[in-house]
Picture (cartoon, rainbow, N blue to C red):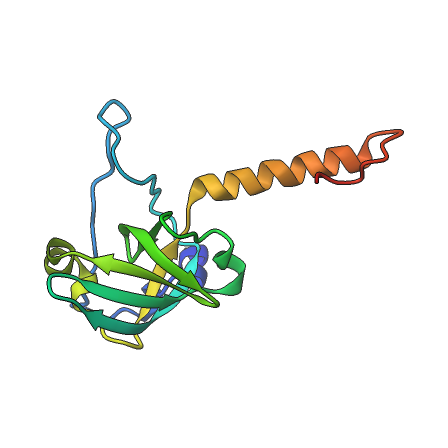
Length: 150
């Protein structure tokens, strides 16, 4: 679909390129972890990889329009892998990859400069949308002196 091609790096993949495929958790099963829908909100670029003793820190750029949804200790999906954000800064975030993630996902093989698909936290997007709607209602209410939420 045009939407997928516009928001993701899918159209730039070549035959034989590794991709992550993960099964969705059943709504009846035990939920432990992050809520990931499999949607792509935009793309970033791997800026740096810093190996540790048993892990690796990966710094990834984030578009300005998505940065407000990325918070330290929050969740983000990178190329379909749900991860915890370990640090944020202007125009970037960092994730820590453990040996299993390095070995079993594409993230262990992607070089600096590689484009990656990003899915930000859906709950943050819903909260923002609800607050914007509430603000619009307050501003439009007859006799309202508030104008916006504070």
